[in-house]
Image 1 (tube, rainbow, N blue to C red):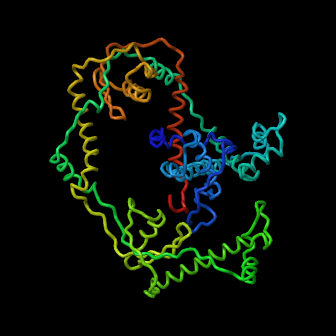
Image 2: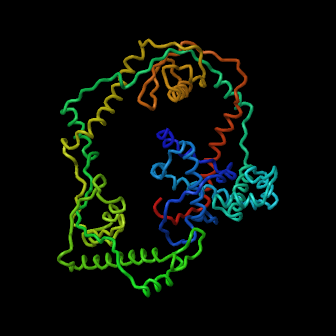
Image 3: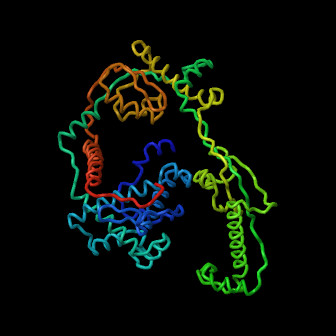
Length: 488
């Protein structure tokens, strides 16, 4: 499921011109902080339309919930990174902004009455069978939205729908006739499935080494970093009442109860002392950092060594990123907090990536060599067998009869039939995505008289997809897109 979704992720984003209020009922998911360019108020600008961080976070949250539902709750931040969810969210907003620019060029708008009619039709805002204003506010509040934010977003969605409605895509009678004909062509075939399991390989070191010689640069060692580091453990100090009171007064907004009210000093004292200790620990770490840079560390300071790489990291991913930013001319990193302890790193040496020896790379080479050679031998077997193979014979099947191909999974059968009915060869073979090959021979062919196929629906979906892609490309050329957010 995950592999399929990653392969088709661009089609999994909800189509922008049919979105309404899908985010109602979805929780809010964030991902931390970003660095900005010179546009602090926006993450991107498309034509005259700015995209805010708030919009990006809400779109990310909505997509996150959609994926999580599809994966039955087995979606997390790591999978979100694999899917490039942040980039998907921004891309969706950019496409929306392109269409909003087009709407603006046509002087289109959504009236307050149109907006209200849509809002009051949503059952999620009903109470006792009718739209209820208090329920409306409550539902939005539960989803971390204000009425102003929600109505602004909904107005944009309605404006996009209105704009796209001016550009309808319809099928002609001839197109429907062609599609119906294609859908009703039926073939009786003989087929046989070949898989890589039929291929046995026992590669010698000589064969593997020859393979390695041609691909040495694909088998490289990791870049690694030799470092020295010192630590600053958490401090726990005693403070007099004057110090505690002064710190509380200067930072009283840090100390609030669950309702957001500022706590009195007597209730906040424990947290005040905790913050004082955190500040003292950070100050001590900064002093150590300066002394480390100047070579003036006290004699009793313990200095440790380590070697970091992607696969060998005793710290955290953030620590590795910090070390990667260092250089031999600027080898010291400011204190980094890891599990309540500050670490101060000094870069000693960078070990660059080099070609692995054959012996070191052998375990990596073997599966790659095996996969390629099996694929090569499978195709050779298919070519040798195509004229004489004996397989299973089907009844008459159409492009929609995947379930009748019992020797293939549903996904494999769909893939095979789509390729079969676009092939112009009577006897040949078809390669499937999962390293299988299907030999086939068309024994008979006929045209069915079934008139229930939705030819217009197929045509409309196909033409709509092509039209929408073309429209977005045209708008991208017309309206300049500036992205101010870093890291995507």
